[in-house]
Amino acid sequence: MSSPVVTRFAPSPTGFLHIGGARTALFNWLYARRFGGRMLLRIEDTDRERSTQGAIDAILDGMRWLGLDWDGEVIYQFARAERHREVAESLLASGNAYHCYASAEELTQMRETARAEGRAPRYDGRWRDRDPSDAPAGVKPVIRLRAPSEGETVVEDAVQGRVTWANRDLDDLVLLRSDGTPTYMLAVVVDDHDMGVTQVIRGDDHLTNAARQSQIYRALGWDVPAMAHIPLIHGADGAKLSKRHGALGVEEYRDRGYLPAALRNYLVRLGWSHGDQEVFSTEEMIAAFDLKAIGRSAARFDFTKLESLNGLYIRGSADSVLVDAIDAILPARGPERGLPSKLTPDLREKLLSAMPGLKERAKTLVELLDSAYYLYAPRPLALDAKAETLLAGDAPERLRALLPALEALPEWNAATTEAAVRQFADVQGVKLGQVAQPLRAALTGRATSPPVFDVLAVLGRDEALARLRDRLPA
Image (cartoon, rainbow, N blue to C red; front, side, top):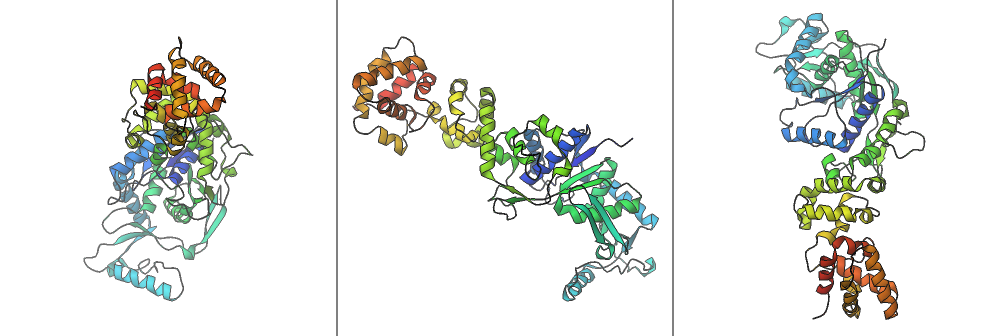
């Protein structure tokens, strides 16, 4: 009987949860859910100078926002340093590791000599077989792995295929530094083993690490987990992903108005495919996810595609869900629009009423919020350039003539206001647009908006009539 599937996501808390990390987390999550297994979360915080609590919080918040839950408690690598040291000492005792007393100056000289001779810089093994009695006094040694020097190290990778390294090209890596702190290579192996990880899914920038870590596993007599190294994400221009392409923190995507389900859907299609299907529910993703369907070439991040997909999810979302999502981005996006950091009950109600018309054209929640400007704009409304043009000439006098017809309405809704405006246009002998366009400009301050009669209904009689009066000449 095979072991239950256990995957892990293991970010370093030296910054936000970036988009590549989010995709790695998603692939691990999907694989675990696909096979009824578990996904564990390990924070690799051994770099004490660069690891911050703020980065840890950003990673955990980003995972939660994306809907990627993990199993069990968060594991912190630094807290396991004693266990890592214990394993290094056991390798020393078994003869699979040794003390190395090479000085920093010697290591620098090795690298410089290798470069001068056109070789890859690597440790030359000078302490591998020396008698410990040769150890210089007062020098604290590192512990190095006694790696195989002949033959090959092979990784059977689910994405990259069979990858081999000549062992002569892989030197004896450091397991424990001279100050007793474990290296990343050792810590990862010990943690993955102790956590029962059966499948490692990570970026292909870790492929060489897979060879080195496999050697540590074998020296310890432990089973090597299955490996899958996924290509990195590039920008739309094919260059390595940078901030200008979209290498932002997950929280930035949230604040820019993307929905978590849309971002999740977009990420799953970065490097993985399932026929021609582009849109996936979470259940469909889980059912279809397969490592064999991950391509070997770098995926390309395309903001236009993401926006298009996000617009699709916005149109398909319940109005109340979108209002809640807008509320969540107000702390980041509200102040620049003169809005509080939380929706007032009145504005929430207006947004809910207006949402069917608002969500049809918006590609992000920020666009949605901007198109709802007319709901929260202070009077008198600031006009954009096109609205000013629409309210020029005889438009204000036409609005003055329209006012009595609207004021006289016994009921105020989209149907009654539309009937009144149409009748007014007929009596005046003008096209509906010649009345509706300046009406929209006066009510919203913009030349485009949801249907103008919906706007009248959402604003309500008192607010709508007050805005029209603001535009009448003295």
